[in-house]
Image (cartoon, rainbow, N blue to C red):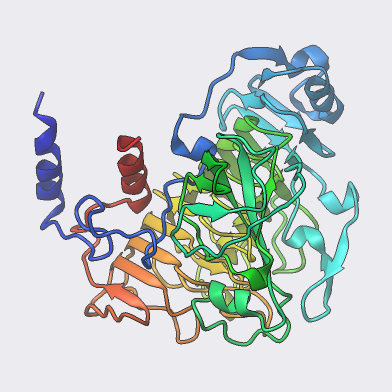
Length: 507
């Protein structure tokens, strides 16, 4: 066995000429908590500090009447199995299970587990609008189903169960770990809390989230943010709590900062080893969707989706909550695609949203987009921060930043395919720039050379390192950071993995 110290050298030799970013260095020696490169290592299940578990099988949907012949309605059997199983895994043996209504996990420590995404198939032959209508409108007033951008047949449903807020009494800098609070009674080391803040009349929090330059915000509601953190130390003498991670934003009195205890009702639940089969009905374009959507994660924490294949879905996975991992997702289709110039895809699109994140600190990794969506990967809204997309691929990926200040999200170690539309985004007018502050793009590979996004797309603190391109390096102090390192030469290849390894090594 070669000595461990030789591994980085051998890896660099296999990749080419090793180059390190000025923002990180070889092993994080250039990184600063208050710098322009955020801390992303806390994303995903249990902050990456332990693997996703494999609980033993406790029940089988067949024991509750599921048939799995592709014709019999097995919805009730699935929901009864969930209702009558306290914890563990519910096995879905190989077969085709017709599902005609919501299947909801609303308890912790419960996993719906198939025998593999190619063996245990859930079949859906009607849209969610026929299960439970949910009509709404676009930002321009066009009537559409809210399933166009939300909802799913399989749901992990929780509540963050917020406690009474405690005022944060002192101002703390971005990147800091310590907060002065009005009282420490009721707080304990290891407990989860949320740092919540809201905009003032001058919209200064929105401006902060956009790195000082929000763009047009006439229709944007006042910002409300919430960063989940753990308390690792308490000093009763000074009324100070020490947090496990850097603050994504400073705290200021004008934003009414407070510490809110949270006790998520649903943790450690998952959906895994399943295929989802929807009809091959040709997609008619965005806002036409009636709800052929797969999965929704709602206000749950430390849950997961893994090894799932979504076939002909109009909407793939929609996640709020926090600290969930979505891994090993394949999105495929054999239905006709819609080709419109505004989709920026010659191959066309088969649905509206692929994987969309509305909450903080999720990890989406190991995905495979074998088709295009209007929005392949989306981060949406003020609370969409600290999320990581890594080690995935697509035929022509796009990174949708849907305005409303999604900030401090990372896209790393990705094969973007054709490279025609990585900056293609949605979102209504006057809702701010697409990408908020500290958005980071690291090691992006593509067939064609990549250019920075169009002017006005993002806040001034945008980071782009190691994109396949022929553009020279431009690294201003107060503008977009573009480091022209060939992806094959960039070390580390995966910024999230490097940050996680560094943090765990220092525990």
